[in-house]
Image 1 (cartoon, rainbow, N blue to C red):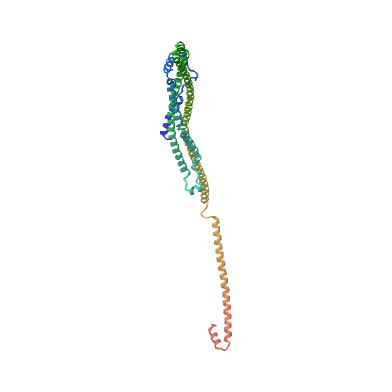
Image 2: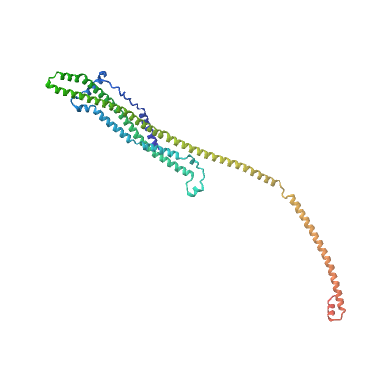
Length: 398
């Protein structure tokens, strides 16, 4: 909710408290009509003033007796009915339901901004959880701001209607009391006719001469007819007053409904929406705190891993270094192996020399043997008397 809307909601709260604190007066009992004989001076003057409106010789005055109050009552009733027909409570109720649906439709599970996207969401190119949450929050916030603005307009209209109904109730109550004065005046006039005017007319008829009796008798019948008309008129006024009394609770019922709706709207604007925003802010803060705690835990785990790994590496490195430090320039095994290899080389050299000497001796012997055999062969060939033999024999030294 924006600051401007929040300020308007706070201002309207005072008006709501004002209309709820208004106490309307209760109407008098329908049968509590004060007769002229028991009325005080002020009431008696008002009753006599209305009695003066009655002219028994004029039928129209009897028919129209109290008609001003009755006509205005009809006007008030029509105004009340029009107010009920034109009551714009439907959109206000729809706005409240829409706001509730919008708030319910906002899932707090979407706050898990660390949730990884599924392959399907990646395939469709959907936004990341955090971006989706931000967009969803802004969408719901904008919707609530629009609904809040509409509710403020409905609330303003309802507050005006409640004040109008207050005036309507007050005016209807005035006419309710006005009808009681007309009824008292009518009843007082009937009593006056029954006890004074009609008996006087009857006495005048009895005393009239024969020529005037017909006229006097007609006047008496007209007077009694006027008296009956007035009685019926007073009865109609009593019925009208009863209807008027019934309209007063109707007005109050409409007012109570309007007050209930205004109170609900104001409670939603002043309490529900800020509470929702506060809870959402808390949820976001809790989520961020959880993320921070996870980050701290991961950092601590990494630190512990580094400490453990470094300690192990230090141990291994130190072992290798110390081993190398404690080694000689040459390992004894390498020296022994080199010595053995050297001895073996010398022995092999001597063996090879002995073998070469032996082979040379054998070769010398074989050469001598071969030379002897060659001499023998040449000597044998010399003994032959051939040129070849002579030539061959001369070729070998003796």
